[in-house]
Image 1 (cartoon, rainbow, N blue to C red):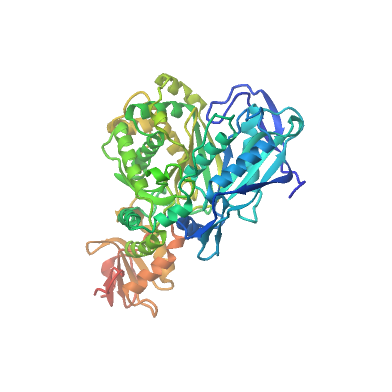
Image 2 (tube, rainbow, N blue to C red):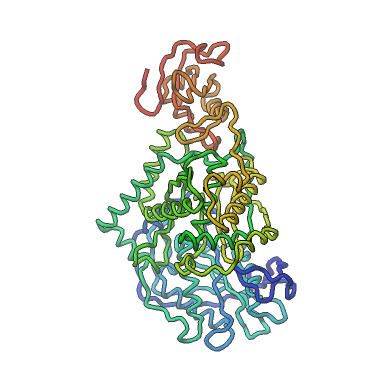
Length: 615
């Protein structure tokens, strides 16, 4: 790959504009950011120890996930590493960056860890080695700190588009200005999710900036808790008890989570996926007001607004939401660089709450879910198989909401310098953009990427047949309206419909609420048709005081409710909005007109199909 030129990226650099700030209206100049790879710099590192041990629970969770989806969008996490305008002796040079990388890898064992063998891996920490520092040269001309945002964006794209056959824990690339004495303009890195989660990356960014700061600027303390230490700690009785309690909490929520939180009634999968991004300076201003008033995190303010909008639109009084947890509440985990990310769940009760009340409630429930987010993923999966069979649906732990914001108490208590009226005026600067995405089993997923200066919120529709682009845009704009109104004061529950201007979804005939799930009977009928073909079957919304009952003709392979239920479970993957029937009635043959339960002959067997046969 060396000596080959990456595709030119036309990007505008704005004088003085930094990530998180509003763009300067008039660009200083437009330049083509052309990255030309040159030979990498071998960076030698030496850590305090080598070691080998089992995976932590967080690593095991990621390993199991990546074993099923090795090319998932989030298998690698890419981030800009901050490069200050000046280093220890002036502008940051390639040698300065290499020294900081060597110190970073020596300091954090997860960055010099490999995982082998592939099937049941253990983590192996190297005491020393060489970390390649990849280098791209910029075009001729003057490059300086004001160009960093655009150059960093190009580096991040370059990392995502260039493969890494060695699958290292970390890749680092810098862009240098040839005319500036190898001055480093920007730096970016890609991290294996086995080595770091988003919270760990924020810590690495902090340490990298400190290592490049002038002497005495940001001293680093001694290395802290490492993944090998965490793996050993998790074998203690106290930690095992915590993990067991967390597992019990997640299992309790799994009995109530809907199979498909949000899809338009009657919608059919298209196989296409997209993301819609809301960029809103107005919502960013409003979030600061609500956070200061409620003393809650800014991400919780955004999540509460989304819950209010989605619950109303989808027809739920409470939302049982999969969340992404990265439990760092305990002191030894505060500066831990490793992956703690696991799926948890939070139950958000929306009915009757004003937005301020919902923000406080949401923050507490999200904190509780995060505290219950460290458990044995293999044991969870074993329990999930039982729950999925009993409930007759597929469980999905893809997070409903993922915040990439580093939160701090100072961010919650900082003074608000923007008047609420300014937020309303800034609505004219709101933009919506969309882009294609890889298909995803979760029909709806929000990612909060920025809240300072401009709120950037992604809605990823796993299948735009279930949740079209127009619907996604309407949700984002409704949440923005709610936030901007809340910036002027609390919004009572009675005003939510007026403020959001989003009506509940129409509930056509044949759409019923069963086991915490909104279900189209027609979807279940399509599932049954595929599962029992070529036999005849008919699903009824209710029969004999039972909901969602399937009548079907017996065949050689289907003579019991258990056999029918097993067939339906096996076909569920192709029917993302369906659940299995609650009750099966197996008859010797189908009537000439199977449209009503009374037309079917006396059954051979009947029952839920989950446990012992019932006649």
